[in-house]
Length: 169
Ligand SMILES: [Zn+2]
Image (cartoon, rainbow, N blue to C red; front, side, top):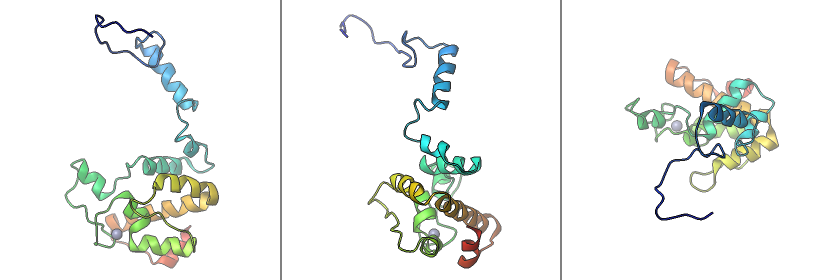
């Protein structure tokens, strides 16, 4: 392609050969996403044979939009970022699912010997995919139970002992 210096810069729609956006082109582009054409990175979540709400939960987790206290504060929807379970550190998604004391206990009970990702040492999204491929719905169920337990503690003040949580998985 040849560029000419006298031509002005213009915005083009990358979803159509013409470069012009129309509602029809936008609709076709969105349908292609649903068909998985553009969704090679995250499509594995939607192909899992699990309940739809768990797929949505995994999508939120892998897109860093789980409403942890840190997430809410970063969007001006809260004041305190401290973990409401251990009260030791900032509650972000990594802490909820891999760092909190209760979390680590649960992982060790259900998957003894499984090496958990450490903060900053590994892409934990890749870790998630690899281990969901390996352990399937059991691992998703553990993540979901961790999220439910976190919400019970934060919103209802109910603390379940680890053996009860293991029984829920
Ligand atoms: Zn904690």
